[in-house]
Image (cartoon, rainbow over the protein chains, first blue to last red):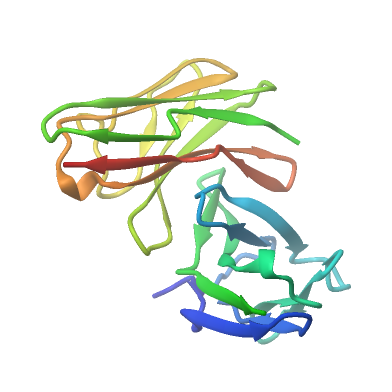
Length: 116
Length: 112
């Protein structure tokens, strides 16, 4: 079974509008971390935002916020005031501990295109 | 935070040859991780490299195909051996610092 599910292979958003990228996860661990990364066409992975499983408040980093709904096991990324430079692949990831080692599991990604 | 320098950034290689990818971290880290991202797909963990011990490979990846070295706490190499076109991917190294994974710039490999 998929541990990280991103159901939107591609999304379009008009410049200056907000967009939500969906992510659901599956884990039986009590302690875990949820992350969003941006991957431009150049290939590097850029950290955007982190949410710990015990964090009660939703994480925010500038124009990025994470809508964390623990009971629903969802961790959606909200980008406000979209910019043309936001066009990229976005990956949701979960960090869990397996055999005493941290491991990251990535979703399949969502390709976001910002329209002028 | 951590800054990772990964080389080469891209290469085009003939099938049957091997390519070694290097990652240098600006701080000492216990574990380094190597990922593969096939075209249009997500990241898949190849192996975890600890300094002073053999790397731990994930299911579907073997040492003969992807030998890894980890001579010290700031450096690691991944070799893609006897390459075929199916090995065409982006390869990324990564380290964990506190709660965050940091990535190298990636190596875009094309096998012809």
